[in-house]
Image (tube, rainbow, N blue to C red; front, side):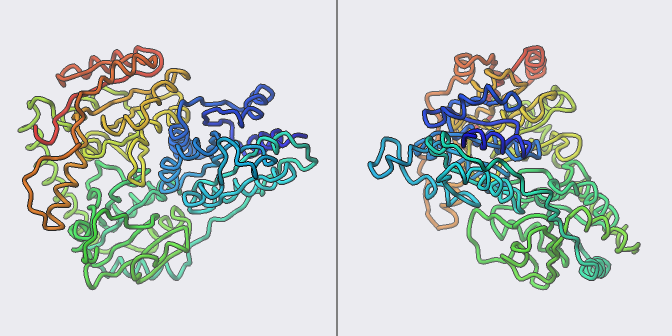
Length: 548
């Protein structure tokens, strides 16, 4: 059998039925073989970075290992930024690139380079298949490593001549590897004692709460013991319902902001994440000085990694939380905590409502008004792929994120991920509307995603929040000047998107109908039009910028 056949057999054996790719010459053996593998669908992209961004969200949305195929050194270079995002998102990816014939490597061929070295910093394992005899064993190990907790991308370089070599070694699987650890009984009893003794208990929940199927268990624990639940500044999954009265919102961008949220807790339980990803340095602790800090995690490497921890517990999160609910018993203080959280939630909701009413008729519309109208217009089962950046809180406030609304986000901070991610999300959710919410600046990093959505007739409503600026950079400029004591009344430099971008025109050029909306009362009509249109649709919502 040929090396290319072993590669494709490996995909089928591991349940990978799609390849997200941008084709090139060294990939010709694989593309030419796909006709013999009708069980594998090729998702066609116009840029390598978009293929990886799409695969990243597909892996999150489907729970499967995503496979990406791209072209030689420039193609891999195009993809590195999105591979970084997939790494931070802990997405199980097999990223491949066709490589030049190994027999000409000493002649410095066109498009040739050390692909393994290029990919290594943003992958869990980076390797080149040197002979067809290695194809089966390497692919078996690649799928294993990509899925070991915490999951992430693996890179495999595929020289064109190796794909055409003969081998007797076929595709194999590592087997059914039962890697979930059960949390220690004594450790959970200690945590239950901490909960009973604590005056004020807070929980910080990460993406792995969702990956481990533990969100309902977390809600049940929070409701029983009266714990406020916070999420990270950015997240790939939403670990707790945004409308729940115990939800205390997302944490800040530095230790001072995190401390403002967590500093009143004498017990903080961190669950399912690497905690924390700060943007700015401060010399403040995120926690109270005398805090009891507990970390529940499925990866031993994360326990006690960043902060001195009172107790680190290794184990499957859903199982541990379910057992913990029984261990904590019933205490009078639990109801007192619950009542306090409900009171705080009601006060915050009232203030938010008052602010919304005072600003809802402004023109251009506020992001809050845009999301309010959008949430009323889309189907209840719409799936959100979000990169709203400076408008993210308005998304959380207006949709039942983590509750009835399925949500996927992007980690790592590199922009442009969600525009591509909409494609992968729609492939994973073919029977639901995917609502891709992103900013105008972010969307331009991966605008070719529109073509792929049209090519595959995907059910995506692309929502571009057009404030016609890099608003987050303006906020960060203000932060920089304040933090480094730089007095300035200078204007923001190179942060306005002028001339204005014509998103509807760009979409039309790639086969996607669209509509620009300045009046929020027209959003419902535009959404209805989108729902009546087969395939993707683009909605550009003109919203306030920083100066307006």
